[in-house]
Length: 89
Image 1 (cartoon, one colour):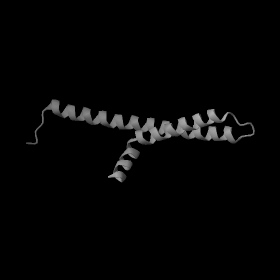
Image 2: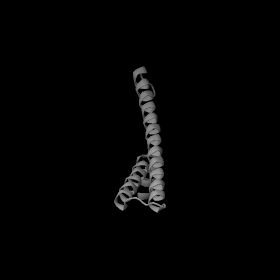
Image 3: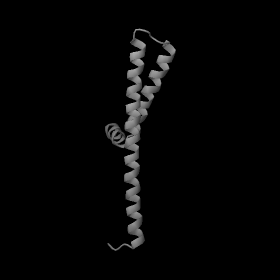
Image 4: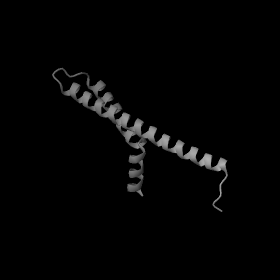
């Protein structure tokens, strides 16, 4: 019952390695998106509230894009995604 062929063992190790690498890459990209979004929000607020404000439409679009990047980063990060699903269920 507990015997597995060498090919089955290699397939399970490869699948496990692929899952771990996928999770690691998704986590890294999630953090990069979150970081870029937070920097974008900060930069937009500094420019909008600074001594020489820019156009309101441009600032609003930049702020919306930055918040979207944060949202996608949070949802794309495996750890955050699992917490959101657990809280919803």
